[in-house]
Length: 219
Image (cartoon, rainbow, N blue to C red):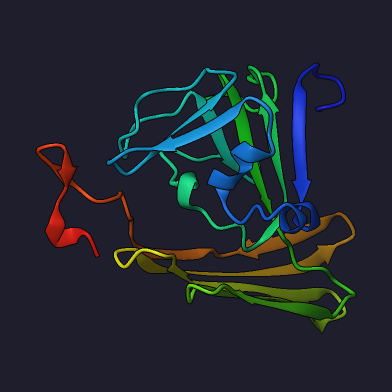
C-alpha cells in the first residue's frame, strides 16, 4: 500500500481541483511540485516529474511517467487534453513506483480515480461558468438510486473554447455514466463508460516572415 512504500504523493479531491481551478491535466503542473507538461505538434504530450520523462511524444510513444485510470495502465494516453469531468480524486506519485503500479513509472505516475455510483444516496449538482471572451462551460453530476441494491451515476460536461484571439476556438464534450449493483455480501458489480470528444483549433501565434509578423494574419 501507499502507507508502506516511501514515496512523495500529491492528491487532489474534486473539491480541491475546483478550488484551485484545475480543469484538465495540463493545469496540474502549477500545483504539483516537480511536474511539467508540454505539448508539441504531435498527438501526445511530454510529461516529466523531477526532470525524468520521455521525449517520445508521438501517438504510440510511452511516457517516462506512467498514466493510469483507476489503477489500470493507459498506453499512449492523451491525458494532456483530458478534462476532469468525473474525478473522485487525482493522485500524482513522484519517483519510481514499480512496486505499486509496475510499467511506465520511471519518473512517477498520474492516477485518475473516477467517480462511482453510490448505493443508498440520491442527489446531484450542476455548475456553469463563462468569461468575457465568450467561452463557457457546463457540468452536471447526478446519482440516482435505482433499487435497494443498485444505483446509477451520470457525469456530463461541455465547454466552448474562446479567448482574445480570432483564430482560437473549439469545444470539448464528455459523458461518463456508471452503474453499481450489489450481487452479494462480498460481491459488487461496477460498470462504467467514458466518452470524450475534443475539437479545437490551437492558437500558436502569428507566423512571421523576414523577422516580422505576416500582415495578412495580423487581425
